Image (cartoon, rainbow, N blue to C red):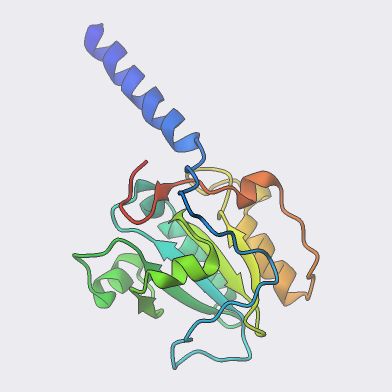
Length: 188
């Protein structure tokens, strides 16, 4: 009975811990919607398409839970949007290994300065930049840790809104509050 209770308490603690927002780091500078974002787009990107940056940390459980959701988004919007995986806190993986993990052939960058330029301080996070190089969306994929709630599929809502030229899209606070692992050391 003690072992069963201990296992249940550990599971509850981990569920509770991952539902808390990621603490905002000291010195954080927010980047608001419509702010120009200076990035060097990878050479194979089509400048006539928006850019979707997927911030991923191989050591973050939340990032790993999100892989199927990201794969689905790429398959759905790949012809209309440029996709890039931005790997944070990496010291063990190559771009090819990350592509194999995702089963996707999208560019992989290891430039942590992109996170600061976009206002990202946790993983996983989605960033959508319009064709004028302005931040359209920075936030969560979904309110659910497992990215299974279709009603709050914020990343899909952002892409759909941008492609339909809705520049006054409003998201609820859960979309914009960071959840997941803190950067750069994947602590939660």
